[in-house]
Length: 192
Image 1 (tube, rainbow, N blue to C red):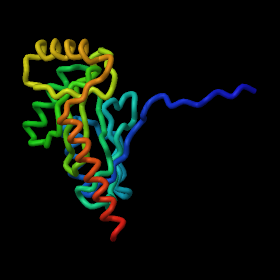
Image 2: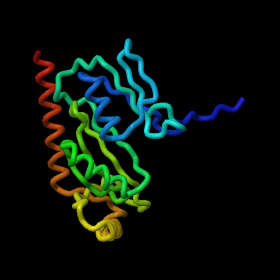
Image 3: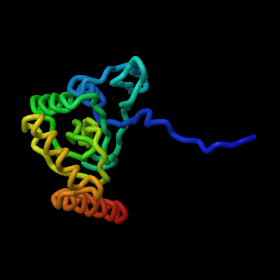
């Protein structure tokens, strides 16, 4: 009998415990446009999908978050968009709904808009550019630039930095700040 190494085909779904599951549900269905595919009021769980015909759920929202607001549990949850225009449209929608934005960047191989859901979970909507770029590659962009000009600038940046990767100093500083804040929170937790 031949044994093959098992492999994961793709990420199926992510589950988030929520302080206010109704508020989270309104955000993910109303602002992000995910479809509720199932729910159980007694258990306090909701299943949502961007592709309900092919994937029952990609996101599960559940009651019962007991970590204080502001505690960072998730680095990010990312949602892939089929078209660049979708990312542009979400950016406009986020601004219209006063969604707190984190950063808008080119990863060379993708363009991403990072944002926070109502409970402070960091999320991203992104579109794959089809370009090859070593990661990490984080270059802040002005998403309100003419789309063709912006894509030309991204292609030029990938030509310059795609083989080596690229991170702006502001992103490196942000990453260091996140690590220091996490270390401080962990130290405080240990003292208590």
